[in-house]
Length: 374
Image 1 (cartoon, rainbow, N blue to C red):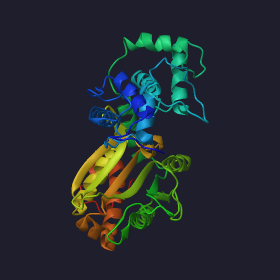
Image 2 (cartoon, helix red, strand yellow; image 1 turned 30 degrees about the vertical axis):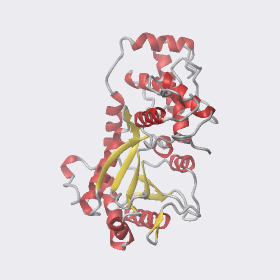
Image 3 (tube, one colour; image 1 turned 60 degrees about the horizontal axis):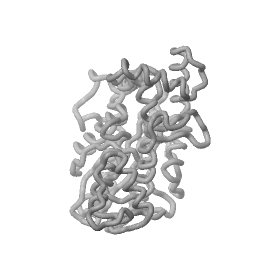
């Protein structure tokens, strides 16, 4: 698919400018510049929008940014919303509906802007509670009641309390915990290659080591694709959802034109205005364990709305384990001992997520399988 950036021109650029203007972002155009030209002012507006939406901030309008622009145009009440398995409704209107339901105590799940079964169930409960026709459809009567109650039901984040309680129950339960493991790339898709190393092969080996360590400590670890295939992010999310995993860890290494870029970063679902509580906590644990056990530079954790993070129904993190284009990081990633350390750090983060505070140890000091979940 074609992407658009500063210097390009065309009707898509004019469309982008129009949508951003409707969102109250300053888009110009500059004096003497056509609305169809991608100028410096539009570049700045695109970057601001990407920052707001939890996207990669690069000023490039590609599939993710175009998708987010389309979703941003939707307001609650613009269209009839209901559960459609084959083509679910996606947009800011769905996110607004989910937020209102969650704030009133109805469990719509994660506020991801995707109208799924959980949102349908929560909407039906709301309708039943308000003595409306229970059809799981957000039509005129339901909208009127939502707008009426919006004046008296404001603030609070009960969904955060619900996620925290769910985490506590999982840690105390007797059922086996399942971790889906996604090795980035695969098959002919090698990912980043530099200094004689290949991202696909590095993360596949670390994923296998992590799977073995999870099994050794009584957890279930499943690789969601083979080394010979590279499904897209939606397919990876679908497989993890179908598995019914409790957590998902996606492994990658990064690269950059400059060899000075280096360090480890962890990403979880969310934007600056909304984030997954458990996903954010897992990301923090992963990042802290990685930094304390290795010499990698700490690039911190970040919320993102990438498809894999958004479409997985369980808390999911994506870990960028260093830069192959940086000699120091590449030397680490090439060493088998380092890959063992990474697998141990990831396992420790998963274990610590479910440990009660009284059994937890300082970052980097948890050695497994000495500590059990139960």
